[in-house]
Image (cartoon, rainbow, N blue to C red; front, side):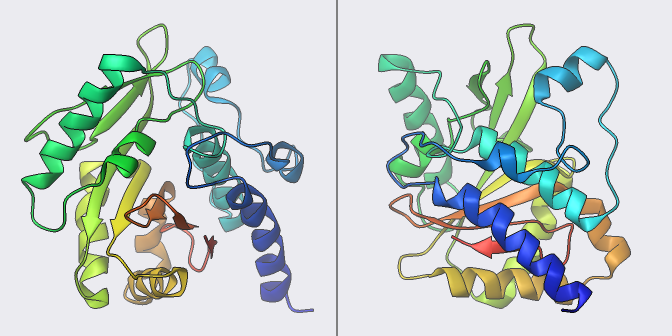
Length: 242
């Protein structure tokens, strides 16, 4: 077995475990992701990183990038391990705000299902919608002390596949190359097409350029909220279809 084949098999196991629990209904389901990450590659929990008072060191090994980002993505995913801290009128107001904001932008409107899923975050955090005409994250998740734990930017994409790399490149600096980019694709786009868009992104960039993105991940969803893949722009070829 080649090194590339062995690494790919490891990645498939890690991410398939995570994505198996990512249902489209937004309900958290049991997963063994905690057992899938070895102590050498698992990232500290957000609360542990905050308690240390030091920035988390950025791994340079692609497998470490995958392991850390997968754990962070799982902890914030609606339908995986994420928590919806809003309810009632507050939840509906947040959904309304996200839908209204993305209805004003180029591309298709954000669906209410994906707006709700975008409000799931790490346990112990509360989401705050950034609001209209604010560059950067669309949803920010703060812990009880007011510390920013996670930022999520939302994009709706219905363009040609060769346009996607540019959209992802534009999103990176707005996110300070950290956190989740949630991409709602057009109806009929499947996991294979999503993977093709990521391959276009990787294919046009050097490893050094991709390293800038190693603290980001991209979560793709269909308009009805079905997961279509979790991919790491900062680690070439890393990820699996939804």
